[in-house]
Length: 583
Image (cartoon, rainbow, N blue to C red; front, side):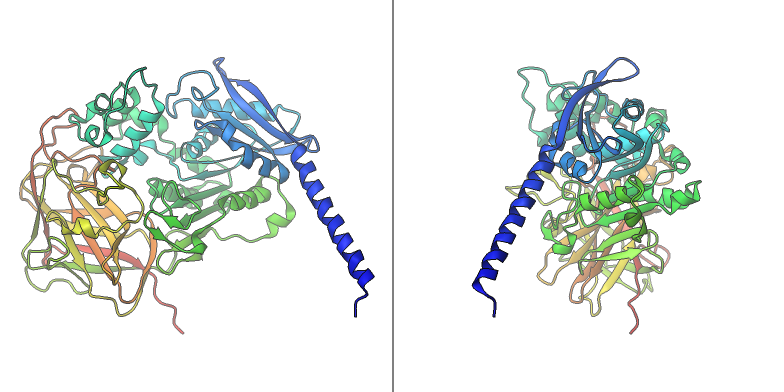
């Protein structure tokens, strides 16, 4: 039996220990100091820069973030990095917040990154080793700095970003209209007294080159991006892809399936892992691929779906572990094994480790389109079957009217047209439109698990010289809700080449291969596997006016688009199926 005096002594010891821990924590916070300086670029422009450090660290590795979104928002992150043994540097990009100059999106980030890194290496608190972090724009500046071969840069962690800016803005020949219009409207100086127009109406403006005028003021960079719809010399300076294999950098790649950067981020990983000239660099790449869109990385709730607690990943902790291994060169961190790929399987909501993307062992498996010519709407006769058509079937027809495009997401009182999202939403209301074809399986007897890049091969025709085909891969729940898993788009005139467009011959059948992007999921027993096909994904992508008149055209044409499925035209979905583990 414990003596009361012993209990009192123990309580006192615990109280003293608690006070000591609190005091230590406060002292640690007090020891972190921030100094704002200006760093001069090669052309004399001065960039506002915050340096967070502790006097106890006189010779430390440095973590750098360069951002157009206000360096002062980095305070909490900075203090975490300093407590972990790093100096943290946050800088406003040229022409943003407190930095001098003019923002020309991405145009100066390579040389400004080089100059900033060079400046850091000359500071007495830097041990000569620097890493960079950040996502989206803040991720791209890492690649741009890296290909300049700057001094001191030894590791990067680009999240949800590009190495080819053209491929980020354009997919299958169509442009991500709402994305770049909204971003540039928010980052182009607005004249005093100007009120932005309703974006719903502005995004309908033709010619497409006049969208900035429709919003309300000139936006030169928006004009430039929209009037260069092909990967010509305009984009060369912002195409870094060919330079990536020369890099000798460990890279932590993080992105979500629903992110508009998903293809680019995954391709960057694959390129570095398979083609880096330095063998060690190939083995120092990691891809974390989750169920997120651009604004929800690391969260479990994405648009209208909650992927469970496993999806709530601490990305900052992953970055810290990566930098401890490769920047700080901590022996304990270096001994911890890591998987080159960690991907999240949606539906069964679990993380899977793999050695590559797509993971080895997946088996391309076809589901063929069938109908009696009436696959329109979810009440139609469209089927997905494992067996191909044995005899000729009537083609399915939908009417694509650019004046009444199929929205990317169902429009609701809370979600107007301009607020279309990339993440998973119930598409069932869109499937009641007659200009949407729906093909689905019966309720599954056994689950289907896949991981990789699903494809759809379509045999199509149209009575116009150009048209779009949009395909969504759908998981239909037993209650009828239909959630998008992956989406692809192909503008017909770019079906063979982005550089040399080829018009359709009216009503002549041609084949399209549409990549749906990286995706991993399990379609549960009782659910249905489905694809939806239509002619637009507006306003996430611009409408095809179907005239091939180009960026300055004012007119639109209604297109009668057909999907063919017969023995000689085997339109089909191809899933990279992961076979079930045998007991």
